[in-house]
Image (cartoon, rainbow, N blue to C red; front, side, top):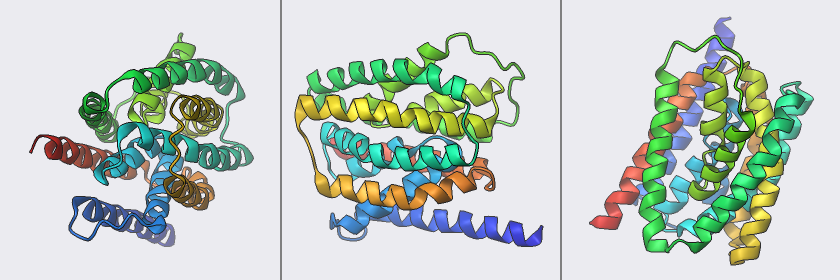
Length: 278
């Protein structure tokens, strides 16, 4: 038992150290060299958190990319293209470990694809100067949701949600508009309603793979915005982290990790809004 606690503490401190490095980097304290290594590190940290708690890859990645000056549309397009690879790796790992409820998976996929396509069209039509503060404000709300869910100690006992398809559609829509939100919207709602956390995280992660394929295709078709350095970096970092995060889904104290993710998202998004108006 003491050894397991030491391992958990070490992993948590490692995640915290990586997160602090990214925050310092994004704040401009160290030079902003947009090297491939930075994007790999962003992808690794985002996937490590996302695979363990079922949320935060998109919002973390998008928050950091916006902090680096990447416009909202290219940032979202790069994230969702990279996620084709990372969600496949994560979903396959969860499936192998028995973390997937196939009934829930089927209920989420098609509505999630439809919602994602609608979100892509909205992001394509909206002016960049308008969408950047809107996306940052949205990310603050999502980050706050993550923090609240991490702090809460009481969950409902009911295990039924009548409109899982609608939930999937909403998740797909807000995920694409903000570059993330699939996990916070769907995973949080299902767990709060009493669904098994392990099966929820695994099912939502695998469903995201199919949704991401459609999202990446529609955004590439509409905009043709491909930043391969960002995509390769996020994908490589995410693929490296995927098997570890699926394993940590069963091992780590997820509340601490969720709280850290929420604080990072809110901090970076507040900074993004501040720099827009100062």
